[in-house]
View 1 (cartoon, helix red, strand yellow):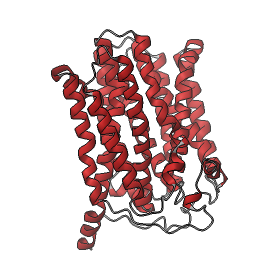
View 2 (tube, rainbow, N blue to C red):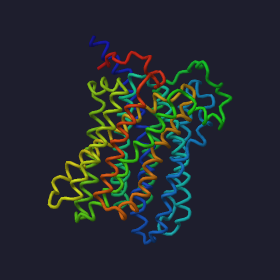
View 3 (cartoon, rainbow, N blue to C red):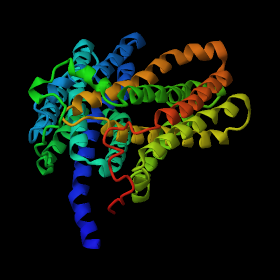
View 4 (cartoon, one colour):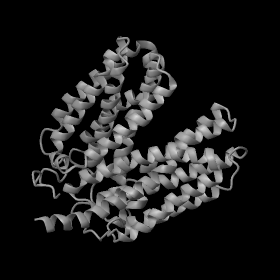
Length: 425
């Protein structure tokens, strides 16, 4: 058994590591532009209203489903998504090299234009890499694949918002951009070790050369697709709204900026990294084979994590409780991201990986974004205690809704799989 287990590790371990490295390299520039570049521009003396325009660079990641059909054409062919990953990654790297020769202090329109261009190409690479995850990983492998992906995102957040900002402070803009370009381009060489074989056409699906923008609508016609999409939109409302509002809440509670930076940054991200690693353990992966049970447990845990902020909003001198609340919040968001990532793969049809992944990720983000946009206004009208109560009620309602919607066999391909087969260690 041990030689067989070693062979499995050798075969699949390399695949997970390469995909995670590619995803981390893709994510670093986006994190840098969203979190570190505003700090740099403020140091350079730009007004806040100008800096705020950089948030438009996140739009391509929200709308990427619009050009996802282009990537799914010939998606069953050998090395199709590998080539998309290679060319888009090379494009991002070259754009960032060009940015190295711009003057960040005096050429904001050009800098912003390149940021949007990198964001557009990077969101396309995001589709291609995620399609590789879906195409290369089978049902039993997807929990480890999702864990490695979220782990890569957390590392990219630390590197993009921390390391490269320090690099800029000590070595300047050009060195920072050239280093970032290298971090994007070098992992592309690992694509040669990834085997993306040709897939057979699935009965009842459209021909690959016939995929068009109308194919976006076919996602919702599948069994259980509309119910699942509704769940992922609603699930992002509570937990991610709290994640957004927690910084203003800490400020209003009287916590000093250094402590907030530690709680939200080093402590929170450290918890997220550890939890992402833990979700890749064999025992957890085996538990995740029962998708219904694990997703229901996820929404219950999310509701508990949100509810923990209710006593914090009404009690005084319980600062130690913030560490518990932030640990649970980051655990909940990480676990939710991992489990949602697994089910996104399950609900993606063969030959439609790009379309189905992009639509589902838009659903995940849009609920949280809408709630984040209105959460400030809601808090002003209700106050923090009632706001957290309302979000807790939303979480409880989602638990009930999830229980009823997950009844019956409606997860494509899952119910027909031997769910309780062991996971190779």
